Amino acid sequence: MDYTILKPSADGAVMVLTISRPSALNALNTRFFEEMDHFISSLSDNPDIRALVITGEGKAFVAGADIAEMVNKLPGEARLFSATGQRIFNRLGDLPFPVIAAINGFALGGGMELAMACDFRIASANARFGQPEVNLGLIPGYAGTQRLPRLTNLADALYLLTTGEIIDAETALRMRLVQKVTQPEELLAEARKLASIIASKGPMAVKLVKEVTRKGLEMNYPDGEKLEQNHFGDPFGNEGKEGMTAFLEKRKPNW
Ligand code: CO8
Image (cartoon, rainbow, N blue to C red; front, side):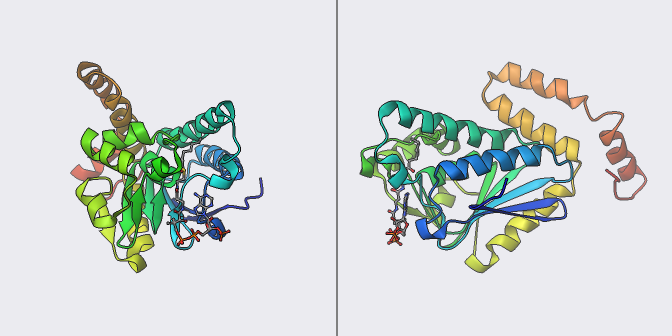
């Protein structure tokens, strides 16, 4: 597939994906989701990639779903648009390595939902966040109502969802919506650094820790412990054997 909106760029084990439709502040349209679906499939088939960074071109990360494309939709069509977006964003959570959102500017509506679908977020000091759907007489459709209270808390989530207030990066950091704030010119370097650190760890361990942590959050506590217990054994005899042997032999592991 020839991409017109996505710009993927691999650097060793780290893939950087730039969303590039700056004339519409990278607003998410049907073509974006088609390309994203294809791109995620290509990553699932690529064993060399160990981390993905998603960022936006220009002054926005993503300024939301494409309002021009949504304006004439009927309820059934809008539900389908929501279901497609939710399915594709969920696929980021299923990737066998971490996905880092590097938020370079506006992350509004569907853009904030994309950022929240990533495993964690770092933001440039000039990033802006918000769920302004209520200004348009809408509610979020890419799981913003579900992920925001899980990442922050019910009151902060409802505050943002009902007021539509746009917050700055430091406020997002205080709400634990982002994990780190950098100077704008350092954002991508910092994201790549974190991605490289992760890429240097045991790939099976990283895959398992992401899967168990994400799945466990959706389970009751005893089932989550059981899930961890079950997967704890997986790396023994292979990757874990190499990691522990390397420690005892005072050398770097050969994954
Ligand atoms: N959709 C379509 N086009 C957009 C969007 C968008 N979300 N955001 C910006 N653009 C376009 C503008 O229309 C403008 O186009 P043009 O140059 O042709 O007039 C261009 O991008 C530049 O934007 P501005 O001139 O407005 O730039 P400013 O710097 O003045 O303002 C803002 C930047 C504050 C970000 C402003 O553009 C804005 O408020 N954008 C809309 C933000 C918004 O409301 N986002 C939420 C959208 S709704 C949503 O995301 C729901 C998600 C769930 C959907 C589920 C499926 C049903």
